[in-house]
Amino acid sequence: MCDKLYMPNNLNRVLKKFDFSFSKSLGQNFLIDGNVVEAIIRGAEIKDSDIVIEIGPGIGTLTQQIAKYAKKVIAIEIDKRLIPILEYTLSDFDVDIINEDALKVDFNEIVDSYRDSDIKIVANLPYNVGTSIVTNILEDRVRLESMTVMLQKEVAQRMMAKPGTKAYGSLSVLVDYMADAKEIIKVSKNVFIPKPKIDSMVIRLDPKNENKKDFEKAMFKLTRAGFNQRRKTILNSLSGDGLEKEDLKKILDKLGIAHNLRAENLSTDDYISIAKEIIKSPEIEIYC
Image 1 (cartoon, rainbow, N blue to C red):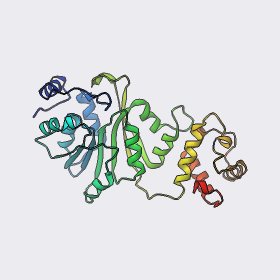
Image 2 (cartoon, one colour; image 1 turned 135 degrees about the horizontal axis):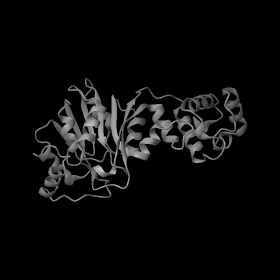
Image 3 (cartoon, rainbow, N blue to C red; image 1 turned 120 degrees about the horizontal axis):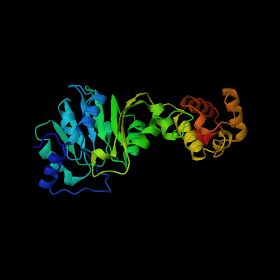
Image 4 (cartoon, helix red, strand yellow; image 1 turned 60 degrees about the vertical axis):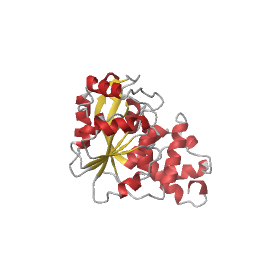
């Protein structure tokens, strides 16, 4: 077993031992900076009673450090070539390795197996599926205490963006509605092997874990419609597909929201308010 895998010499020794080559299609970029690993661990605030789920452990660089603090780690890795490597690097730790696609994993089923424990996700997510993994977990309302994840910097900024900013979009509204988000650390592209083309950011999401509300379908449809036509006023971008302009005007007037605003000017609470008014109108069935 090889410790401190974030050290390039140790990482390369393991890669050579198993004759491993990186897969570009799987977005494999392995972290080689101990300071970033420590920042992730601190940001996640892992306790010895926590069950930690890691997605995309690679060769176990972050996994080893998580396992030193957590009660147990569940590592989900899609690349079957990495399984024997993980069995080698994690042999001294209590880690369950699952060879599955994280986009197909039932996280609720995993979490339900540990009802008496706090569950956290800590992961350096592959760029190509990071957004989908995060949104799927939030929308499925997996019972988590927190998610501390590394994503490409641009995506992380969109998740935390505020109304009126360039990065603000439907993803921002979804994340804001589902979780409290904060930045942990910015990560340079120079601390990975192989080096990606873009920088990363680690953020922490604390899910609000609320029961599904009846207005959500309408709210998410509104946000997608608005940001798909973000140059138009909300009167034009939000109407259509079963929502007439005149009905929308009445709703906006009732809520005191100006017709000439654009999607980026509305807060999460604004979208919630509009959606709640829409579902009160049974004739607008497409949003129900």
